Image (cartoon, rainbow, N blue to C red):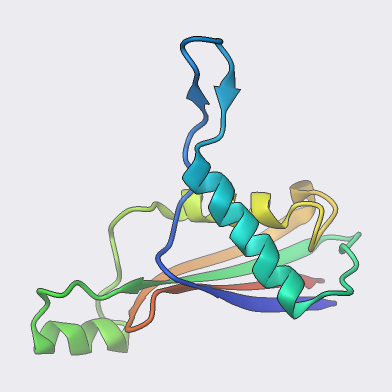
Length: 136
């Protein structure tokens, strides 16, 4: 079983839980919640009759970052060829966390099933995140 999809737009990393000083309760920031919800919606659009994977899972994530506007044509060509990779936020681990949390109970029953993981950060004209979830 393989699930494969892309979510277009700027990339959001998993933010730390925040604390409400008035109530003393922890909460997930709205931007994080909305991105996880968006991931689920893209997944459901592509796989309306999904069944969560029950065995071990391999996840491949490729985060395509937008090329900065002030970049020279020469440097832009190097970025598009993969000679220069993004070394900016969000960090790879925060991208992984938001994707796995968003797909929890959808593509797989629990993120503890993920035993293989690949992530890559690249530059592209269209910012997006490519996700491939497969049983192996």
